[in-house]
Length: 150
Image (cartoon, rainbow, N blue to C red; front, side, top):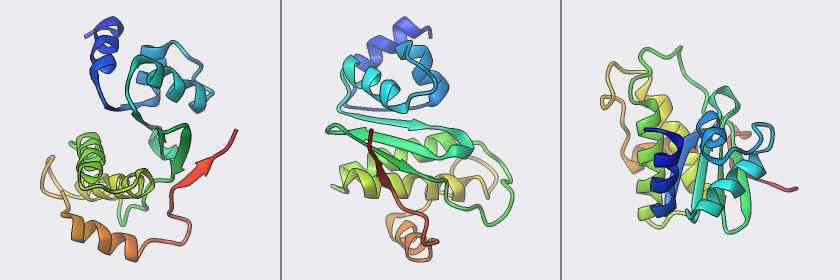
């Protein structure tokens, strides 16, 4: 699927989750500016934009605010990365459907992704909301979504 086709899909979406490189391809905006990338995706139509950035964590934009979350620390090196992105994106959608805030949603997704890569296959490590909340209760102090200004 080319960028034009993806842009048409994004125009119809309420929530879009993609990595930083994909956001550059879809918007034509600068790789260097998360604000430009998220604004470029919002301009296509979605109310909620989530951009993953590999080892640099993830970002979410909604109602003019941009948030950043670091990755949740892996308890061990990843065993199998299959399903990590799907776990992340599905957790975003599920948490929002439950009525969670964008900040809470952004803290949940990396935890489910981290759990999935510790198992073989795309589903074995998926966590239920209660299990995600247990990880959050044990999270390092620095693990929190913070608004980025500017």
